[in-house]
Structure formats: C-alpha cells, structure tokens
Image (cartoon, rainbow, N blue to C red; front, side):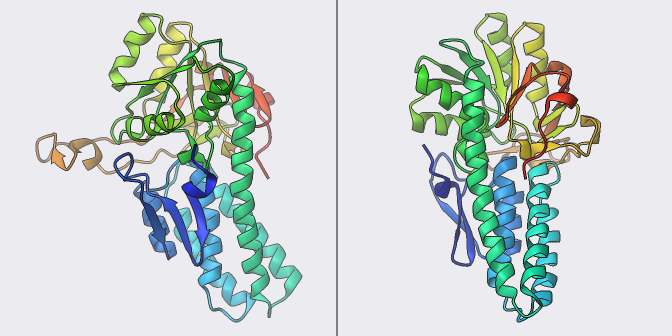
Length: 351
C-alpha cells in the first residue's frame, strides 16, 4: 500500500509528488519548486483526485511561504495572495482546492494577528503545520470511510468502480478504494471490476496498479463493457468517489460515473458515493451549480501520441459529469453512511 509520503510531501522548499502521468510504467517523483510548477502539475494530472488536490494546494501555500524572503508579515501576505490566486485557478471542479485555500487564508489571518507585522515566520510555521494536518486528516477520514463503507458490501462482493479514488487520489489510503481495502481485510474474496476510464485511463493505469500492489483481485474492462456485466448479474455494487457534492446529494465525479449510476438503477444494484466531508459544498443547492471542467480535445482525439480522429474534428471533453442524488443509494463520509434526503443527512464540511 502507498504510504502518504509516497503520494505527496513537503521536502525543503518544494512539493514532491508521485507523478501519476508516468504510472504504471515508471514510479517517478515530480519535484515542484515554484507555485507555477505545482499548478502545471495539477493541470497535467501529475497529482489528481479532489482530496489530493486540496493537500497539494495547502502544501503549495506552505511552499510559497517558505520560499518568500519578505521581511514583514504584510509583505509575505501579499506574496501569498498571488500564490493563492494562481493555485485557485488550476482546476475548477474539485471543491477541496478552494476548501484548503480557505483554511490557509484563516491560518494566515490568525498567525498574522497573533504575531504582529514584524514576525512573518509565524505565518510560515502556521501554513506548514496546516498543510501537514490537512494531509493527516484526509488519510484518517479515508480510513474511517473505508470502515463505514465496507459494512455495506455483501460477502464476496463484486464491486464496479470508475476512475481512481485510491491512495493516489486522496493522499495515501483512498475513498472508494478505501472501502475496497477495508472490505478486503475482512474478506479477501472481494473482486473489483475496473473501468478503464477514458480518455486518460485512470482506471487502467492507476486503479489497476494500486489493486495489484495490494494483491486485491480485479479485472480491467473497457468502459463500454459495463452494461453487459450488469445484464449478466455480475455486479453487486457500484462504488466511486466525488470531486464535489452539492447540498442535495448530487455528486460530480469523473465523466462516465453518471452512466454507471443509471445502469445500476436499471438493474437494482446499489450505487455508493464515497468522499470525505471536505468534498461537500453546502453553498450550492444542486449539481446544476457545479462547474464542469472542459479539458483539451487532444485527450480524446489522440492516444499514445498518435491521432485517432481526422484533423480538425470537433471534440467535447468534459472531465466530469454529475450523478443525481436520486441515483445514489448512499453517500459515505468519515461521519458514517448518509441516505436521502441528503440535505438533512450530510455532515457539515470538514474543518
């Protein structure tokens, strides 16, 4: 199993991460020495998954504070405001990014008020402590989610998952894969159907890699093969993560998740969304308000460095879709298992 420090860590004045774009072929660290380099790594999906992006943002703020030579607290705050804006623009859908940056804002304000204008070191220390705490807390939340979610699965469960919601996406343990890991500890007969997850193959490249590292039985399928698994009665549960959950329980996740929820509903199979409370956006009423990132068309029109569509072909490449609350059997957070009506059952956002 990946250790939290294997996924992402602060090292000197840099944020160091396991480069997920290089897996499964190479296990290579990517060192981000500036805020711009970290934002590029986030946009290029070297680090991805809502909780991991939040961790990266907090570490990025701590890194910017470490790197600054500002002699005054106000000077440091000015530099940090620029870093914050740069990080906030790196990816729009994952709520954890904004959540982590808001916590950094609070830490800066408290430290600056307590230490005074001539003590920027207090702000630097506060941000570093916060980044480490956010990382530790996300891993602890995932372990709690795993325990809650494992209880929902039948013995010998055949679980269909989508994209990657494992240790790579959460900083060390996993949300949806955390449920699988916890279930596997008690019942090694569990089997995972792994959607390849087009267009960037996070299921094939990352989820299959994590499951293989842990010795958990799994089978990779093309995304379009999921329907026949349901028709043959080979799926006991759908389990996937979320990048943002609205107050009513609508959940944005990697494109294709909504499709699986429709298949699950049509075949009477439970569909579980597993995400930490830091992913819940209580400020929005429904999934209609979730911004959906549109990524470059080349991710669809090219594969393995070669064109797979004629030049000039128009491409739509939304990175996420929204699964309506009506298709979700339960949402699992570190606080427990939550069922409809989600507006009443979902916990407050993590603090």
